[in-house]
Image (cartoon, rainbow, N blue to C red; front, side, top):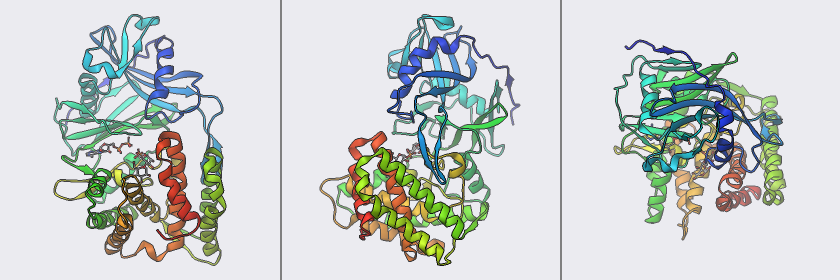
Length: 468
Ligand SMILES: Nc1ncnc2c1ncn2[C@@H]1O[C@H](COP(=O)(O)OP(=O)(O)O)[C@@H](O)[C@H]1O
Ligand SMILES: O=P(O)(O)O[C@H]1O[C@H](CO)[C@@H](O[C@H]2O[C@H](CO)[C@@H](O)[C@H](O)[C@H]2O)[C@H](O)[C@H]1O
C-alpha cells in the first residue's frame, strides 16, 4: 500500500473576493444548485485548498463556499419546519491563462482583479488533469490542507486511469475513470455521517453485492466537524439505468414486469442486509404520530410553495391520518435504515441482467439527521411504485396497464425475497406513496416545472383513495 501523502494547505489570500462576482453569477445556474429562485446576496469562503499552484500552466483549487440568500428557506422536517442557514457547496476550480475549446462549456469567467487577475477560471472536474489529481490523492490516501483522502486498503486503484464526465442530470457531479471507477463529488455538503458512504460501506461489510462497495472517499474536518465530500466506487460497465430501460420498453409497447419483479427482489435483498447491518426499531403510537406529523408538515409546506396542490390537501391528509388511526389502535411497525430516495434512475442493470442500487444520499433537501433515521422499508417501495407511474406518464401515447403490471410484479418480487408483501399493509403504503408524491410535486415545481403534471396525476388519485 502506498504511503499517505501530507501537504500543507494554501488558502490563497484574496482568492474569494476575486472570484466572488463570477461565482455569484455562475452558481445559481448549476443543475445541482439547491437554492434556485432566490437571489444570491453574498458568498463566504468556508475552506480553500490549493491542489495545484496557480503559477503553473494549470492552477487548481478546492473550495467550500457558503452561499448567502435572503429569506433562509423553510424546510419541512419530521418535526415541523426549520430555518436552514446558507448552504455550503463544494467546488473544484481550475485556473488557466486561456481555456482550450474542449473546455469552453466549463467556463466560469475571466478574473479582473486580485491574485488571479487576467486568468480564466472554470469548473475543473471535467478536465482530465484535475480529475487525475483527485484520483491520485485517493490512491495515495493524501492529506492536503483540511482535505482527507482515504480508501479501502483491500481495493487497489491503478494509477493513470483516464477520466470522462458523467453527462446525466444529477444532484451532484460525477466523473468516470477508465470505465473502472466512478467518483461522485457531493455538491451541497453538510457536516455529519453521510448515508451515501455509510450505507454502501455497511452493505459491503454484510457481503451484499447489490450495491457497489466504496473503494475510496474524501472528506474534510472543519471547525471540529467531519464532512463527507465524495465517494469513489467501482463503475458498473455497460449498465443501463432502470429509467432508461423502462422508457425504452414503453416506447416499444413492451411489458416490463419481469424486470420489475427482479428489481423487487434486489430491493428486498438490500433491505434485508441493511436490517442486519444497522439497528432496527419498533414504531409504536408515539413514533408513528411523529412520523405522521412530519408527513402533514411536509404537505402543508408543499401546499404553501406550490398552490396547485391546495385543493387536494384534505384528501391527502386523510391518507396520513388513516395511518395515525391504525397506530392509535395499537398497531406497531418495524423501522430500519433505507435508501430514502429510491426510483428507477437509482437502479443499474448490468449487461448480465443483474440489478444494483446506487445513490444512498436520501432526498437531498432533507436534513441529514432525518435521512439517517430508521424508517419503514415501505418508504423505498413507495418510491419505486411512484417511479413506474412516472415512466408510464412520461410517454405518449400511454400504454394502458403498464404501470399497474410493473407495480404488482415489483411487490411480488419483493415478497419472494423478503417474505412479506408490501400490499398487505395498504394504509402504510398509501401514506408513503402520498408523502413521496408530495415531495415530487415540490421537486418538479422547483427543478422541472414541465413535469409537474406527472406527480399531480398521482396526487389526484391518492387524494381520492382510488386504486391505480
Ligand atoms: N457504480 C456505478 N456504475 C455505473 N454508473 C454509475 C454508478 N454510480 C452512478 N452511476 C451513474 O451516474 C449517475 C449519477 O449517480 P448518482 O449517484 O445518482 O448521483 P446524484 O446523487 O448526483 O444523482 C447515475 O444515474 C448513473 O448513471
Ligand atoms: O437526482 P436524484 O437521484 O437525487 O433524485 C432527484 O431527481 C430525480 C429526477 O432526476 C427525482 O425523481 C423523479 O423523477 C424520476 C424521473 O426522472 C422518476 O423516476 C422518479 O420516480 C421521480 O421521483 C427524485 O425524486 C429527486 O429526488
